[in-house]
Image (cartoon, rainbow, N blue to C red; front, top):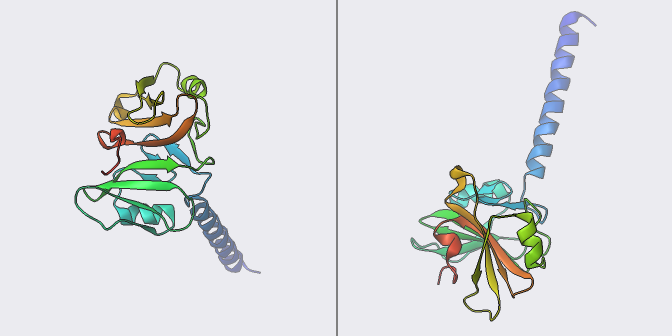
Length: 181
């Protein structure tokens, strides 16, 4: 085999390996129950994306309410279940996790955690306020210290003992108690 043939074979192999690596990364970037909720999104889906950008990032169709200019929800067509995206002004503004005990925050907070567990995950950064509808319940709001994240929050709703649902996103939408209502 001459040098040109060796170089061509090496180039072909490199290209094949590169292609395999890229498709593996893309497959792992899809939205699943293992995706982590951050202050400004979940997995590759970020607050500020359009619904079509979010669907592409999630790797699944997002379906739901009829689009309107003020506020509506979409959710992944298949998995993960009980995950909702609030859309305001045509862009994702918040992510709601309801009845899904598998999805966690980046720090590990999830449905079923005690109020004490949430406070220990975010020491000195949780503001506790009374729940508007649940007697004895609370909103545990994570307020970031980082100035670049000052317009974002993570809100854990509790029954007074344990987390019943949680959400993240930008102000003011992340604090809308009734969602789009």
